[in-house]
Image 1 (tube, rainbow, N blue to C red):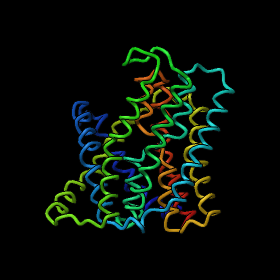
Image 2: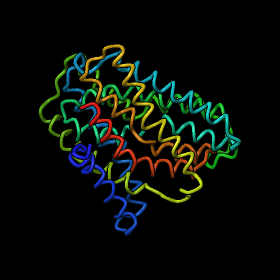
Image 3: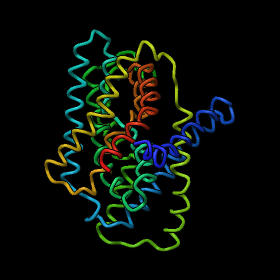
Length: 313
């Protein structure tokens, strides 16, 4: 496990740590972080995903039962989160963010980085294609969670109900989903990219993951840890351990080829996404819990990723 951590995980987290240091030394400012985040989210990561998926074989990198295993694990973990939230006497805002954090993983930045640097470019296409289904499911499920709890006094929109159609539109126009879908079409139809276009995308893709990791570091926040530690521990057990173990068990039971096991483990073991904080802020959730859980579990995921990768060999 230690060898896996040092070889594959530590280099990734060293860039995250650098981002944290740069932010707190005020080497980078908030205005740069906001612009860089848009650049990564709307340009660099979609370019990387389209390029990798478009030039890969769809038949070799997609497996329907692997997708079903992920979605089944997602459903089980969410159901457990709902049951645990129901047992508490916390306000609806806390319950909504608690449940949301148990299933919404940071795929676009964290999981892709681990997959790319731990598995290599060849297996990254599998991760990218499989992730599109999980991204859609996570976002739609988030809609259902907040609609169920109906958090009050949202900070940004001034109403207490979701615009379901607007949220569906956001999911459908998610740049990661759009890029993977476009790349899948190219892959499925065996369309080739012009060498000049391919090289341009390769150059653009080169900044995606390093900058994404730096941005994760700048977003880390460690306030209000003590009083939220019990809740964060439960979220961590569900998100970092139970979710990937359920998915892995189902794949093993259904005899999914071993080549798909590690990509699925990496996707399902991703720590809570930064969007959990954004949704808590905009839709009346618990922003303290979202920020604390995202920060702490991002760091813990370094060891859980090493454990899962070592376990799977």
